[in-house]
Image (cartoon, rainbow, N blue to C red; front, side, top):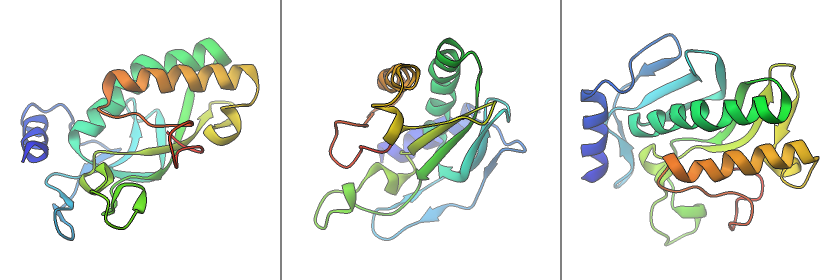
Length: 172
């Protein structure tokens, strides 16, 4: 119930509005408790300047948290470490009705409610791709950038997992 309440409050307060890059789609009634009351298809963030690939289906609260993280952490860190902004975030899992780590018998993952997004890489304006898998232990600038944005994830998200957490060596 708290998830649905959060979703309705977020939409009521118009924290996210429809645009060319964010589209509200039909309610998802997944298997069992899975689903999203007001799912959003997110093609881009930051007023369309940062693409999300592939398009992510997530809920309103997650979209708001993601926008805040991009504005407050990702772009400032990219400018500080690389002298240029991020133009794309590559994601590997958004809404998906599954248990935590897809383990039989485990409780449902936040992915099952549109409250999670697995990010595997960031693409800079010049085309350079910084992946979590290689960059976490890679060049100094990649390590610094990834550790900074990961640490800031704890500020706006209820949970932030990445390298060092089981099953998360290649994504946040």
